[in-house]
Length: 358
Image (tube, rainbow, N blue to C red; front, side):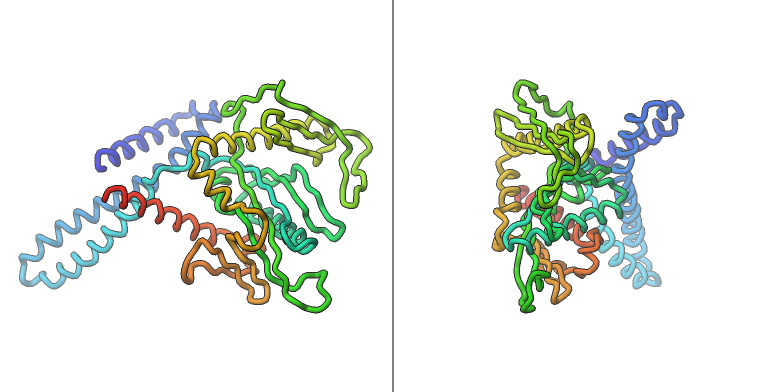
């Protein structure tokens, strides 16, 4: 492992030399790639360097044990540095876990109201607002591609793109059935009702990653419409694209320009086909995603938003770490929750690595 870490340290030095060259700023894509690599390698090298310093401190403390006057102090130092070494070693193992190749990609986000009728649609609208506010906190850009809204402001279904570095790494854990417990606006008797919505998250695919034959596409135009069937405009600017081999259908009606709607619809279609191809190549991931998204009923939930108790519970976590403040989460403060899910995923992957070694 030490040889690998030394190679990583040397690569970081090389990246930093290239970034110091003014010529790199004439190639924005190269600059972006080098900056991203620097960001990924720096914590690995910093942790490795700290671990080396700790090993040196342990060696020095052991030498001090032979001095009767310094033995007690040396023993305390030895205990402290050994604990520090253990923490740094675990952190280094986490940092060296294979990265998801999609982590830095933008995403396609789909939300659908599940069981609960109008209340399910209202909850889906709340989730859309939550993710919109989270995107703003992260400096990402969330844009609606298409949505089907109800007269009360609920969302039957919505498709959006979230563009920004690391969007997939943060949002990939959001896929699944999410449940809400509260007194609905439509409930006059004050009774608590349980409703649900489903969330799907897909990495946005680049054109170079997936080739689509134009002959496989059926493209239709129609008039955009809002809640209650009201026409947004009188021109057929909305686009519906059907991928004939798979039957995948994508609509985009958010833009007034037919060209822009077609371009965005193709992005969504490409991402859906890309995810389907990845799922076919990795049956384990496919099974996991299917189990996460579920059917929109209340039983296969990943998370519950309990309004009476002002609590969000993520059912993939355990102990006290699974509960979060609802007011914060529903207003877009998702970092603590997502950090906990990321840590749980890293811990699971480390444990799987230990089991393979055994």
